[in-house]
Amino acid sequence: MAKNNKQLSWAGFTLIEILVVAGIAGFIATTVIINFSRTRLDLNETANILVSDMRNAQAQAASSVKYGGVLRCGYGIRYIDSVSYAVYAGPSTASTDCTAQNRNFGAEDIVSSTKNFLDTRVEFKSSFNDIFFEPPDPKTYLNNNAALGLSQIITIGKINGSCPSNCKTITIYTSGKIDVQ
Image (cartoon, rainbow, N blue to C red):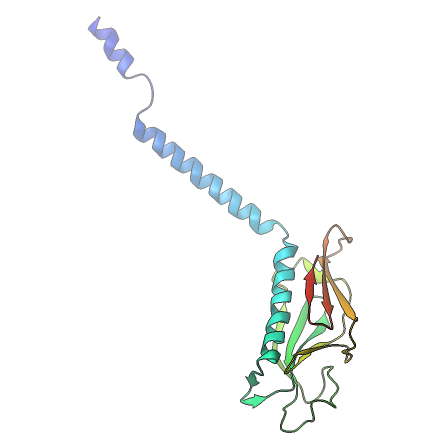
């Protein structure tokens, strides 16, 4: 009878063996989930980065931030190509009458940064006109026009994808409002 009790006590797994197997399974599951999430296209993230750059330019204009040690007539965003855009500072207030200037990107403007989409599978579905924020209000100019009621739509989406299912739409209004849909 003692022999049978010994055999029963060795049947099964120890707590350490179970913990080791659970740890390995958890590590494999975490690795698979992380790799899967990196391969998934996230248009929300890309749209939010673009909107963040627009709101940053708007805030710089509203607070009359100096660029290059000089007060600027404002800050803007311009289309470069299907996967990149530029953030630019308007001309110097010392050398330009800001109320009479063309707010589209020009010779006196300075590109402060050029941005490419982080996800190489995303593109602008069409070009867009310059967006410019002028202090102190700030006024929003779309293609050099600040008339109230105007808006501009920027559509981003999956390369070779069809809209609206694989796209995000960003609408900018001359009132300064920016919507993402």
